[in-house]
Length: 227
Image 1 (cartoon, rainbow, N blue to C red):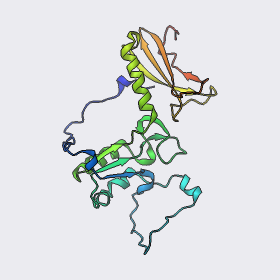
Image 2: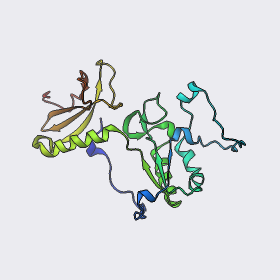
Image 3: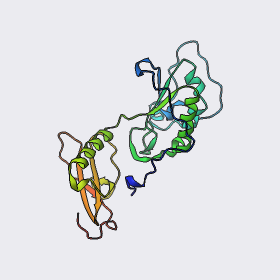
Image 4: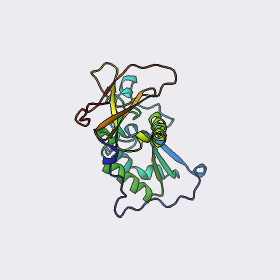
């Protein structure tokens, strides 16, 4: 389990950050794409049709991964820039449920899903998009950010929650299959380690449903076994 304090949030050396911040969003031309469905980085010639084409793939095939990648985006930035786009909006590229191809079933916010390449590829795509004069932003349309923000306010108000190391805990409905939150109405569990004792904060994001779930904690971090 990784603590927030273990994450390196320092600025990249020699990184040139976006400075063209004067343009209002309403003046922008945003290109939204799902990496899995945009381009798979294979070299091919586009097919041309006299009329608008319905596309390829049946319902079963379209529920599976189509093989698109961040590298496919990098190699086709000129295609996105050509109509005048000023920004790229990416659907989530974090580690997802293997059955998901759209990106909205995140299981790990600290890793890029290997199906869509690596963090290095993501960084390269942002840097090259800036060369083209385009911003890149990740999809934040996830309920978890809102609820983490609410818990952050609790940390500021409650003295016992202000200090120590914080850990995001995995949950389970059956006590056997544990995972991080991955649906709109989930249980969000945090542990706060302070003076070898663990304070557990559990947050039910559902406005109406009561929940009975198991929370996985690390006993090696809590030497006194007090929770």
